[in-house]
Image (cartoon, rainbow, N blue to C red; front, side):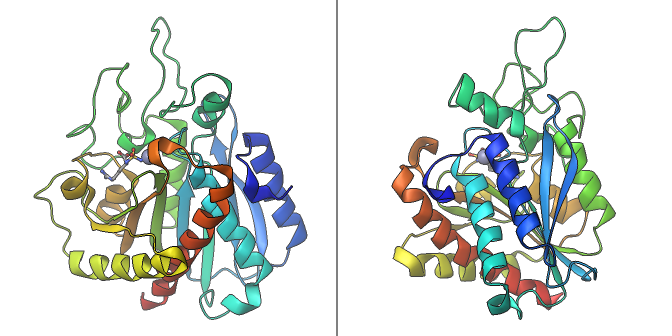
Length: 301
Ligand code: 0X9
Ligand code: ZN
């Protein structure tokens, strides 16, 4: 059976990624960005036209921040596989661009959705003497940390952690982005569900990004590429206005703190985080067109 016909476990994702790196050594490198609370790898892939030269621009993409959002790691793995197997066709898009992909940013939460609770969202950080577990990684980034749409109650689904970037997952991601902040031109954080493309700021309705009209244009172009495959219609705007106000997200941090010019959060399809197995490939294909459109814009910077 093909890879994009079922929802793989962590170990299967890891072998798929290592397989890509082994199959395409001139274009692809496997890397571990760090480890989760339970010691799993934060497995990343670097893809570029020549793995021996370091492009001056990076397109960063991550998925799987929330355990239950099963379609999201697959969308990024599909993107990696497609780019690598047709790399010549993407020579123009990849010119001087490194793709840096972290398909499963919360491996512990993801595994827990297979073993115990299909709807688990947070990571699996344990606190001694406390029965509630886990931090919402997308409330733990150091931008207006814990200001809105987040909670200091350990039992909350949106527990923001004990301090900004307190979590190993958050700190590995922000360390990578800080270190590469002059090269990273695009940050995409892939979630589900709702068919949205969000741009900053997400922390408050009245917080307007100075370049919001540019971000809106780019998001609209990506959404129209997605719609071409089978008409899937995305809504574009800030999450604070479309969904809810929530601070401490990767999107606001990348844009506001690091100055990454294009920062978006996508919400893929799938009612209640559920996607039928035979729909996986279609979501991956339509999303692929959107991802490519985002990466096209990296050459503007
Ligand atoms: O709440 C979130 O973290 C995201 N939605 S989800 O249903 N996948 O949990 C939206 C985050 C949007 N960005 C910010 N609010 N900064
Ligand atoms: Zn999410």
